[in-house]
Length: 347
Ligand SMILES: [Zn+2]
Image 1 (spheres, rainbow, N blue to C red):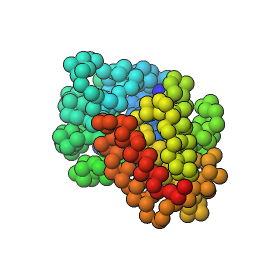
Image 2 (cartoon, rainbow, N blue to C red):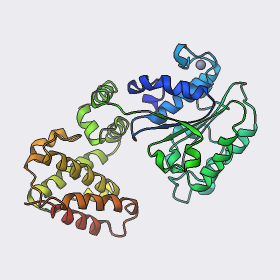
Image 3 (spheres, rainbow, N blue to C red):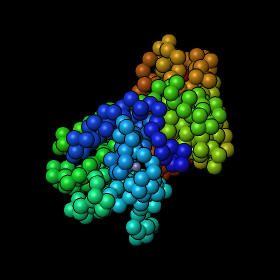
Image 4 (cartoon, helix red, strand yellow):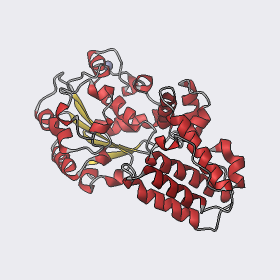
C-alpha cells in the first residue's frame, strides 16, 4: 500500500487540500479528522511534505524534486517526525527510526501512543530546523494517545517553537482531550464517495473493485489493503467464507462450521457479523445494501425473529469488541456467537 499511494493526493482530497493548506499556514497545530480508511494519514503526510518542500508548486503542492522532497520521500527528512504506536509502525516510519526498539521485542506492540513514543518530541521542539525551514510533527492516530502522552503534547501545543507545525490525524476526534482539541484547527477531511472509491481501486488494479469496497466496508484504503492481502494469504477468502456461512445460518440455521474458518480470528468474525447484520437491517427497512450489493437477493430472503433481537445482538457485539483480542476459548466463543446470531432470524 505504501508504494501505491505514498505520493500524490487522493482524488477525494483534492477539494479539501486548499482548506488544509490554509489552516496550516496560520501556524500551530492542525487536526485532520474523518472516517477511518479514507487516507487522512496520507493527506497529513502530503501536507508535511508540502510544508517542508523548498520550491512548492502553485496550490502549495510539493514539487517532488527539491532536496526537502527527496529527503522526505526517502523517509530521512530531519525536520519531520511521525509518531505512530509501535503496533502500527510501517516501513515509511521504520526508515527514520534511530533504533529498532529491541528492548521491547518480546512484549506485544502497543496500539496506543505512549509517552515513550513521543520521547523525541522534547528534543525536536527545542532545536531549530536542520534545513532552515519548518518542522513538522505528525501524530497518527492522535485519538490513541493515552492521557500522559496527550498532556506531554499539550505543553508543546501551547508554546510551539519557531516554525513548528503539529499535524494530528484522528478518526474519532471526540476521544482527544478537550484541551488538545481547543488548541488545534480542525479540518474535516471528508470521505470518498462509492464512485470515487471504486474508480480509484480499479485504477490501482483491484479486480472487482465494487466487491472489494464492500468487503472494506466502504473504506477505499481498507479495500486496497484487503486486495493486497489476498495475494499474500487466505484472509480475504476466509472473510468471504465467514460471510457466506453467517448468511446461510441466518437463512437456514447453524450448520457445522467449515474447517479452518476460526483462523480468521474473533475480531474479524465480529466485524463480519456487524457488517452483515447492519446490511440485513437496511434491506429489511426497504433500502439497498450499503456495501454487500452482490448478496442482495439472499439478504431479501432473510426473515427477522422480531424487531429487537438483531439490533440488540449487534449492540452486544460492539460492546464485546474491545475484549475480543484474547479469547480464552475461540471455538466456544464462535459457537456461542453463531447460535446467538441465528436466534435473531426465523429459519
Ligand atoms: Zn519540493
